[in-house]
Length: 337
Image 1 (cartoon, rainbow, N blue to C red):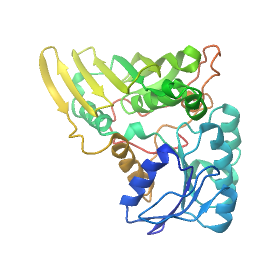
Image 2: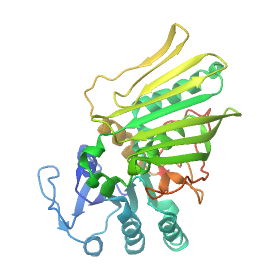
Image 3: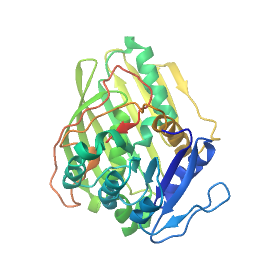
């Protein structure tokens, strides 16, 4: 990328404010334009950028290096396709990338002509969270703990309070939070398949099991997502059955600890000075705006991080690749995923 990255922002809603705050901190970025048919331009470093109602008009008028798409999931495929075919910019898309496999196939069809795999990135921000990076580093530093033999993860969000607006924006609890869980777990183990998924409460909650490998050992992760709560609560527990070590990770507070029986082995704390999403998106942008964003988990055709069944659908199955379990590498920004 150039020394000063020209950025276009599509969608100026809630999550866009996090993008704007992180971009404003960086001296190597400039907000060239915003796009939103239903809202006006936001303030960026005290001024309003050029604003358009249609992405096509913005791409005709500007030459961005990066386009950030922060719109409802069902709009992603069309907007990404426009960027790929009307510009040379990279694209950062809020997760999930698409809402169905037909949309994914549509983007794949553009790969040869527009280098979709090299230009499209999905903002799986939880993989960059401080407590996740700490936990991955601990696993690498302590091979004597052995493989991860059990995983339980529960992500609760108060989105049911928003009613139908939540479904319109996020699709379902699985599409929103399940994506976060799977990309977080891919930092610790090699995910191999979704073995079951059941959506309940009209899509407001879900129960999923996923198969994984850790240092050559196979295991099953149990995943719960739900919007049926009045406040946010997100936790993941990793068990190392051979050594008796357990690791508890609080994603809401960005804290964690590891213990063996009654002995505390390691801790991670947060002083609360940095808002949670800012702490996620800062390292995400560090990777994206580097000359070589490092690849992470790659898509297979049935990768359910990028799709969800309808609210009343039968359980679905599919496979996906994750970061190998004993790697402990820092958080990665993933082309396509």
